[in-house]
Length: 232
Image 1 (spheres, rainbow, N blue to C red):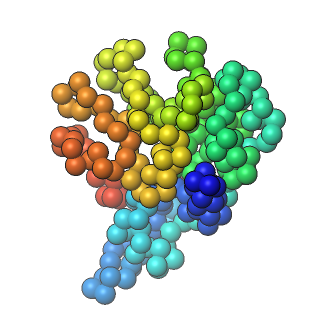
Image 2 (cartoon, rainbow, N blue to C red):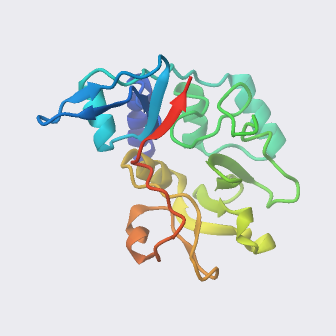
Image 3 (tube, rainbow, N blue to C red):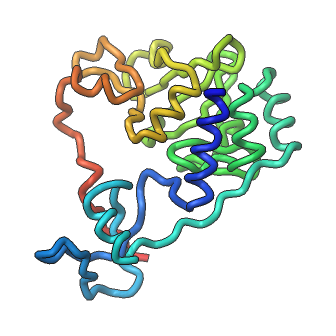
């Protein structure tokens, strides 16, 4: 039943075109009453802000948020082909999401053939590497070659993190300690974290919000709630 609830909530977000962690808004500012006032700027200029940020909510109320395109589910053939290449069946929840809701594209989730890709145009299946642990499927791309994997070979569809920038070689993989259903639930609740190596370079942290308070501040952290300027 837990899988059904998470599936339903993801489907609702996708149907409402409210599935991205970042949104494009028309540049502006909040007036004294808190209303979003669009600034005169060149046509096509947009700010990229975090979903749920103060800027996003104010712009949303003023109808100054660009709509997201619809997402389409994967074909049965794409799912069957993915399982054949992987050598294992997809976790039932992930299979249903691909077939019934969307072929990736919500949050950081990658698709399979015909679906959402990473920054190099690769689907989760394209990203498979025979040198990596068998049965792990890279289902989320966080940028900087950092991925989250789901274990399709073991029980419970447990999540793994991967950060090749760690300098730890084969130990760049680590268990996130939560199953896929909890990982997706954390995304729905806005508290999903990418794989993170502590500043002492000896400790990996979990994937969810409760871990945040235990981390050392990262001097290179950029607040995602601050607007980033884009010119179309």
